[in-house]
Length: 136
Length: 136
DNA sequence: GTAAGTACGTACCTTGTGGTAAGTGTCAAT
DNA sequence: ATTGACACTTACCACAAGGTACGTACTTAC
Image 1 (cartoon, rainbow over the protein chains, first blue to last red):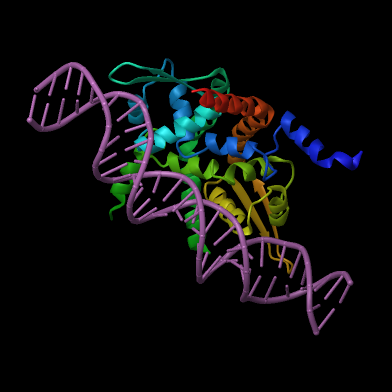
Image 2: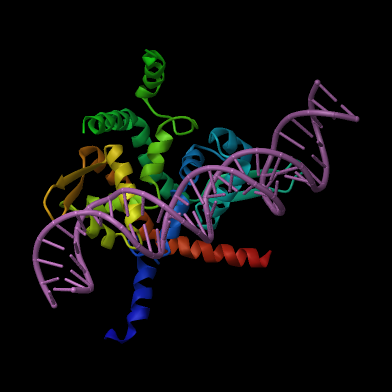
């Protein structure tokens, strides 16, 4: 029974990921999604309609062209983003979420909305922390 | 007192964060939560009961002592994590989620569970992407 | 004729992230 | 007597993330 330890582990992983395990590929997926710009790109793409490259760049404040391209490519590889390039002479590329991407984006949106709504609570917690440290 | 300058900025932000704005403090909060180890620490702390430092280190595979301490401190400053140090001679520190932390952790847990459950879909999307590139 | 927009790719360089290794001080166990 | 556990802290160092700047190829607008 304990002969096929390795293959059992592999089969296990194919069914479900385990983020606590350092070698599990789910770690990479998580990092693509929760990367500095990944989160923001996902919630930007969640807004209705298709999106152009430079439109996204304007929307996501502070992202460089290089980083936006890199982030979009990573999300595309993981099957979250659909890239449609129209071979016209002023280049035209449309980005949108795949069904898979829409599912993740929902979760991400839930998190980001919570942060935006509860920012004041976090900020007041921070200032209290500072005064607590001053007292000690 | 130059207090007026700070409070004006603070008042603006006190209503709601805007993650699309590069200077908004919500960006920092997001990065603490979605940092490499932040996500994993949050879902580990979400499991019932209090948690010890080295217990967390064992649970979150691959994290170094330095990074775990750093991550916990950031989450503590933001008011997500409660640190209770008992001044006994073999040091004893309990970590747990604050009510604020429990709220974020719920969202984070939703995301991570989705990733673990749907890892196979992402993985198959990746391999399809590879074969698509080979064809071109 | 010069500039700007489109969607990137590439080279270069700085900053930051994060890992390793060692130190701290006390106690329990071998 | 030495080792290990506890919960860190500090110093050091390597690599990668990410920013800047420029190039591409073509078109429209000024």
